[in-house]
Image (tube, rainbow, N blue to C red; front, side, top):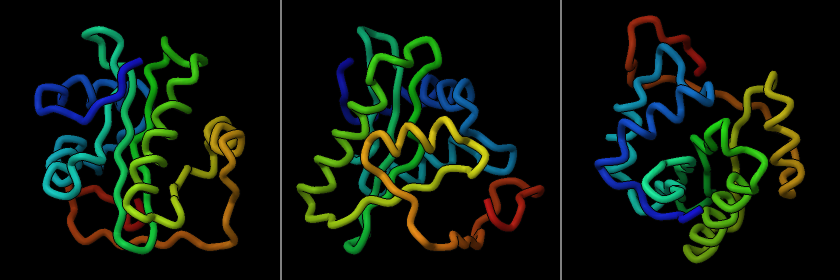
Length: 146
C-alpha cells in the first residue's frame, strides 16, 4: 500500500470508503469534514492506495499540545493486511516530527474490535470522560454529543 497526502480527486472515493466502514453519521456531512480538514493541516490527511484503488484513510491534526487522529479506515476487502497499522505508523511519524508528545483518538465504546486494534498498537484507555459540544450543525438532526 502506498501512503500519500489526500488529493482533491480522492474525495468521492474517501467518502465511499468511510461509508463502507460505517464511519459516517447522518448528522455529519463527510464532504464538509473534508473541506474543513483541507483548510487546516491538509498534509495530515492521508490516503492509502493500491494502484489506482483507494483502500485506506487517516485524518490527523496537532494543536501544539496533543495530536488527534480521525477517520482511520481500511476498506473491508483489504483488512487483515496491516494497512491500518501502516497508516497509524505514518500518522505517528508525522506528528512526532512536529514535536507532538501524545496522540489521542476516540472510538465508540460499542466498537470492541477497533478498541482491540488500537490496544495491539500500544494505545491504552485514558481515565478521562470525553465531552463534546457541537458548534456547527451539518444537519438539523445532529445530536448534542457526536
